[in-house]
Image 1 (tube, rainbow, N blue to C red):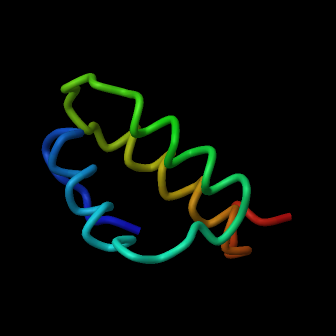
Image 2: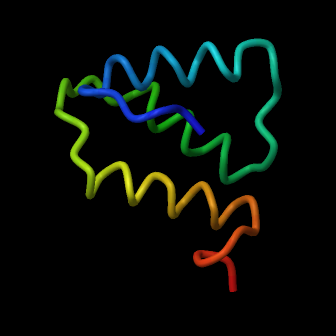
Length: 68
């Protein structure tokens, strides 16, 4: 899970440093990475947006409160 940055470009750069050389852990994760690759927006990362990212990450890892 990348740390929160001010903009999407910085978050993408950190994410790719984290996953460099590793295979996607699931088909879902692979699809998310593919979608991120295709997104060229330069938006600001708000606390709400980062919270959604954390929720999705926790859901995939099986952590509470997202996991059911």
